[in-house]
Structures are given as structure tokens and as C-alpha cells.
Image (tube, rainbow over all chains, first blue to last red; front, side, top):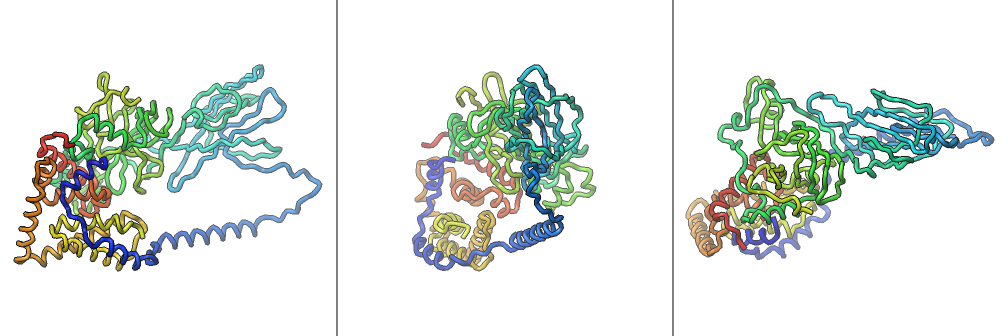
Length: 401
Length: 153
């Protein structure tokens, strides 16, 4: 909603201005400066965690065997433990040039299990080496678990030392090894680029999908929220879904969608998973960006978008809605449309108006639509794109350029 | 302090005025809200802070309403009618707003003028976010209908 519309709405309420605000605010500030108390529980947790870390470090130090440095030995060799997803040694040179190392950043609350498949091929006769690195995610749930994220932040190139200990995550399913490994570039797709570039982001293949703590399969018995709570409205929303309460033409609404978005992208749906956030069903869609009209995302970036509505297990729903009684809840899935009218399909491409999730209940780094429901998802219809929620809301994609 | 008193004073005051329809009473309740807020453990999280403020304000408005249930209420209502009559004008938005129920107007005020986050509003109304969004959509639909879907400039 624009400031102008907000002002218009406020004027429409005709609320008189308060008289005593300034005086009260002054008095209030005098009373409050030191009174803010931080919540206790996080402080306790932080203290305990710090103490545990300290104990660990002290224990590690005291248990380490004492090593007296030998001044006459070569101390240049350093044992390096890395998780190497690709190694590189030039086949043409005697000098080992570098190793590309992927560091996977461990975010709080995000678990990563990643298997890496490497295919390395070299041609001794050529300086340019062709290499293939494919990263596959390990799926615990066959049906609908999104791809496990491998957040590659930066590939560090380091000169290999005389002694090195390496470890990889999992045994690749298929690996062709050569006697002379070639310089590799760390990517998730096949690349012919010679040398070591390192950073995966250079090709725009930035996998920012998030892992979900809970996912649901759809059970054979489905109940809607209306079935559970008679009188509650399970129908899709009417009107503009919060875009503009004061009424606006289509062009203005599209413009507002654009302005409110952090990113406007054309993206393909890779995977759809049903999950819940704070006891409410959400659909997590893993997207691959095809085209960017606004924002900092790049082509081929992979993100997770949370769309309101979906399926969740009845027992989980009831746990968060204690006024509902449902015997044999384990047999049911609960469906809530979340204000959505349409349905996205895996493999199809849509236009999304999105922003990064603001609430801490969502996984960090995930995205959500700029409006409730699916008004901000557009499907192609002929030469134009039409909102999933309202057929009359359409746009010509060339207008976004 | 997790909030700006200048900003939140206006918002809480508007909320109280909508409920009480009396300027002085609304301001009294607003100030009482902030004073009572100081008696509670204060949160660094803004959502929880807002939830606490609006809960206190809502309870105080309810208490005030019960207190004024006798003849005073009639006077209050009459004065509010006068205010509303003064409010009415050619503008379709104002007319459409008056046609909404009090609860629906409160919803619009909280969501679009006070910009209370949806999750906070859902907790205040004790309904799910989706249910709240559906309700807001329904109210917006009604508003559009009353305005005849014409753009206001």
C-alpha cells in the first residue's frame, strides 16, 4: 500500500489528533530508559554454551600430546583436513597448482547431508581440461523432500602441501578417475572452463534452497479446515488480497506488486513439499531462476519459496488448534488453501513477485510472496501472464524489462 | 525500548479511538496502556511488544465500555454519530468505511494504518494467519463493492 493510499484511508477514518502526546512521550521516556530487561532464557543458554565451549577447548588443549618443535626439520608441511569436492593438479606441469575446496557453511538449524559425485577426465595432451562435477543431494524422503542445500560460499584455492588429509562426504555413485587429475572448476553442472575459478557463483548456480524440519505426505483421507471448524471460511479470498483497499487499476496493482518485491523472477518449479510453519500449512517450492527482472538473484540460482496453504497431518494441526477434536487424527491430512486459488506444478515456469521471509519462524534465506495467497504468482496465458488468483490481473512480461 | 513511543502512541490512540469514539477517553486509555506496559516484563522482540500493547489497550477499552454501559454510553454514541455525520462526505471511501461493521473497520485500521504484522493480529484475534487473511480479503471485497470498484484519486 502506498503512502498516499494510507493517508487517504487514515483521513477516511477521521480520527482527531491526540492533544497530550508530546507531554506523555516526554514523561514516558524519562521512566523507561534502563528498564528494558532482556529475556532470561537466551542468556542462560548462551552462558551454558560458552562454558561448554571453554571446557571443550581446555580439555582439548590439556589432552594434546606435547610436541617440541624441531628447529632443523622442515615445518612447511601442514596437515590440512578438508572436505574436498574437487581436486586439481595440472597434468602438464610438475608443480601441483591448487585444490579447489568447498566450504559448506553450516547455518544454525540447517542440516546438510550431501553426496558429491565427481567425474574427472583429463586429456594429457591438452592443457585445457574438461571436467565435470555434479553435486547430488541426498533425499531422505523419496516423495517430496526438497533437495538438500549445499551452500557454497567460496572456493578457496590452496597450494597442496606435502602431507594432506582429505575426506569427502559420501562415496560417489559413479566416478571415473584418471591417472592425471586436471584442474577443476567447482560447479554443480558440467563445465568446460579450464583453470580454477573456484567460486560457484560465477556461473550463477547458487543453491540457496533450505532444509525443512517437517514435511508431510498427503494421506488418503483429507479434511479441509471448514470440515474441522464449521463456519470457518475455507474459501479463497475475494477482492484484491490486500494489494489496495482503496481500489486501483490493473497497471497500478502490477506496479505496486513490483515495488513491494525484493525480487521479480521467472522461475521453474523443481520440487514441491508440504510443510508447516507455526502450526499452519505451507507449501515449500524449490525454484530455479530462469530470468531476473528485479533484485539480486541471478539466473540458475535455486531458492525455496514458501506459499501459504497446503497439507499437513491432522494430529499436528490439532496440536496447534486445541479447540478441535478429531478422533483417529492420524488417518487424516488437513488441507488449507491459505488464500490460494491456483496450483503450481513441478517442471512449469511461473512469474513470481517475492521477498525474503521476514518472520523468524521461516528458515533463514527463504522467500515468500509479497502478498498473501497466490496473487503474486503469474502463469503464462498466451502472450501474457495472468495471476494465479485473479484472472483479470494480467501483465505483458515485456513491461517488466 | 523495543518501540518508538511517538509512533506507537499514535497507533494505539487510533485503535482506542475507534473503539471508544471519544477523544479524551481514547487518550486516557492510550496513556494507561503504556503505563501498564511498563509494569510487565519488556520484550526485545517487537512483535511480542505490539501484541502486549494491543492486548492491554483492548482490555482497557472493554473495561471502559462496560463502565459506560449506562446513560453515558448513549451520550458517547450520539457524539460518535455526530462525528460520523461530520465525517461523511462525497468521498466514496469514507462512505464505504461507515458501511463496514466496527470489527471490520478495526481490522482495516490495524492492518493498513497501524501496520500491525499479520502474525501479531492473528494472535490478538486468536485465529490462524490464513483465517485472518481470508477475513481481511472479505472486508476488502466488501469495501470494493461499496465503493463500486472506482478508483479514488
